[in-house]
Image 1 (cartoon, rainbow, N blue to C red):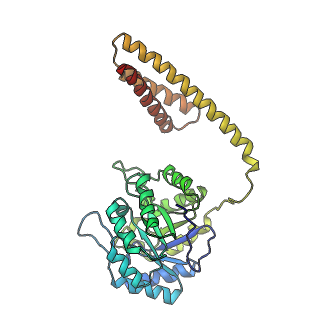
Image 2: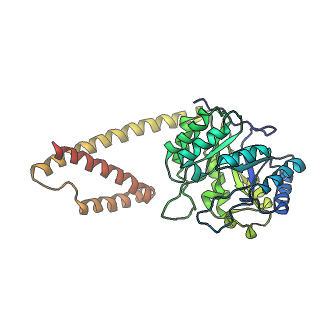
Image 3: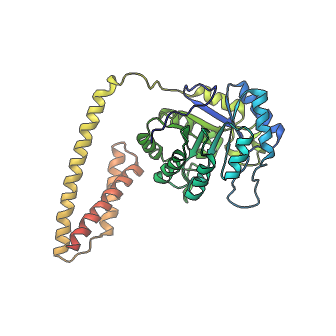
Length: 353
């Protein structure tokens, strides 16, 4: 697939591209008031959810088709492009009929290949700008597959939105960023336009600014942020929405790194990293060699492969050692868990012979 940069009529491609607006279109007054303030602050693309997928029935599920007229009014009054989420072919039909400029496909929909194919078929023959959110679960291939379905339907004006990944264990973020997944997607498709959704990753408005800065530092092309004229009274996702004024301040505070500068000044450091990586791999190979010798000994003496006490000792001592070297303890634990898992695999293989 040859994915080009997203093209939006009348919108400068300069970083960061910002799409902003309320989680949900709730009323004509709320939509127009928010849009007016955002437009005054230079936002060119206004977003609002017309249909809202809720986890459980009974919540606010969007105003539906009547809200599309409010988006039309935003275009006419403030000259902004408009964007909304679609999840079914009928959503696509209504959004196109109403002149919506940009569509995005939500995380829940992306997890369903049948739903993605239905949307791709509904969009076939258009050059509609479409943004694909990552699936709810951390599955890169599912994300790639969703993009491919749209591409195979003839769509070329495509981009993606990183909104984080759900997990059973809730920590600081509503959805874990797992930055390595969008980074790998960018490696596969270097030209694809990648936006970050710090509102859904953070889940709390105070986390939007630091997450937006992290996205810029990772060379994301832009942001899609939830902004509401009165966030505390929002009918959906009130805790993560910013007022237009706070959003404007947040954007002004962003540091945008110059990614066209020469990399000659870091080439020496990159060579050092290459050398260190080679040493790391050589040491890992030696360690696995020792694991094979231990596996052979266990087999000859009829000992079990897994020794829980030894594993606990390794985790505890290595974490302590790593932290003394200014390494994050959780990072060290993950590394040692991977190494231990491979050691067990190597020894199990020996037992089978």
